[in-house]
Length: 391
Ligand code: NZQ
Ligand code: ZN
Image: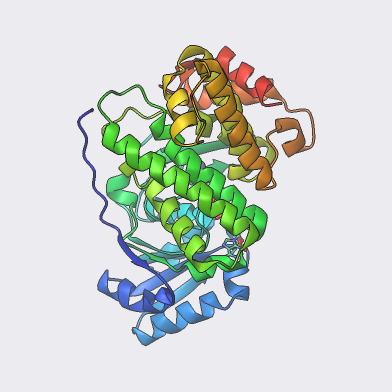
């Protein structure tokens, strides 16, 4: 196991009706004037935003609304939010939504108090020294941003989708997690979220670090449970217990616990971010295309952990089969799982056209340098091959 520091200060308030505690929580974390960041309208239509505004009023807090964050959030919306946060003298950001809304709030949190262009904190030209506090009311379990120190923003001018990790600054102060709020999700949005949270565990599970049995053991348990609950939700979308398990699973998948002491990988995410940056598809849909291709490629070079995954997570019975057969069956079961959720594993089908693989590889190299990942270190030729395998 590698040395590590794990610091996760977020207060999680989980369960039915917990959004009614938002005002009390924000006040306790020092808010006076709150900027409520939200998405394209789902939280308004469901009445959630009205309930939250009332709890803020009851707690004696002022607020200003900042709505309209779109999926795969963009830099121009962050600049707009920075302007409003400054003009309104907001001292706290409340994200009501999923990863796109939370990540936009985090980017505003970095940009509003800084003299520097916020994008420089994403493209590596500058390091942030401070951030406004962020609180979350989560409405879709997927990105895990409610418990992570990460933020992912697309610069629509340069078509760069860049993920940053500043845990000391960006971990939310609190996250309200009411599984009931996720019952209005469309089936495909639930599915994208499940694919994404599982991949947050793969990125950490597929590691060459030795001596990580405890972490691997609970990572496998979380992956198995998320898959079981996903199947339940596919047939019973109103099942509260399954919604609750998936919501907590999505947080555990990405708050860092599954990666402690390990060298993590993150190739699948980097390969996917090029797809959603250029073709604007949901992140989870892109991952369903990339992960099987990445596993097949890596199995040729470093099969051990994929073999373990096939047996311990995909429940392949190893008796009487060689390593290649066990791995092939494990990956095939994972593909079937994605298909059962209604997702495609074909890149061409996902984007509805022939992908421009050369542009994707060029952009990947510009964003990440000449190699990617750690489980198998991928050259740009390898990345090109994985995109082709995903066609
Ligand atoms: O915008 P509204 O109208 O709210 O609709 C949203 C949006 O269309 C809808 N939705 C959310 N909650 C709902 C709901 N619809 C009905 N009922 C509800 N309760 O769902 C759609 C997708 O929302 P979005 O926030 O985009 O989803 P997600 O949480 O999957 O976030 C995706 C973004 O997060 C990034 C992704 O790349 C992508 O940009 N990621 C962020 C990470 C992080 N910060 O740690 C890690 C991830 O790997 C990921 O890259
Ligand atoms: Zn992700």
